[in-house]
Length: 124
Image (tube, rainbow, N blue to C red; front, top):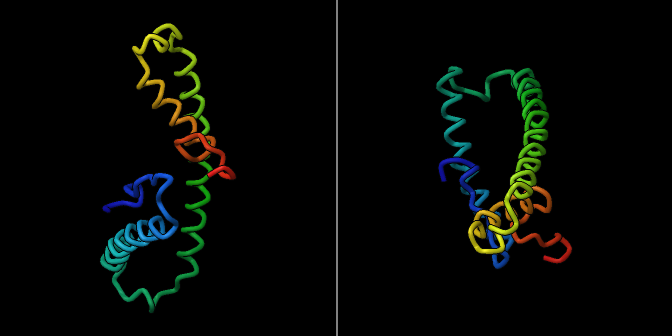
């Protein structure tokens, strides 16, 4: 996997161990690339540098990313709901947009319940 975002969404037959291995592999690859890029860009020997100032900067960036991502996800959820509401029921009932409706429903479930199947966590 090239990026952490390449981690596949698992199915209900997947195990915690499957998930852990995917995360470890993806994270390990991403970390190695990032580490070596940083070594090259910042002169190497990280273990000899003052890391606290850099860590504070990274935490501030992280907070910014979360602050931006949360409303983006809420807006994505709104758009999914709006798209479903705009589809004519007659077309969906006649099979014209069944697959589109299915994908929109899965997106909505993924955003709100956090799994595509629409099954509450306690029922999984």
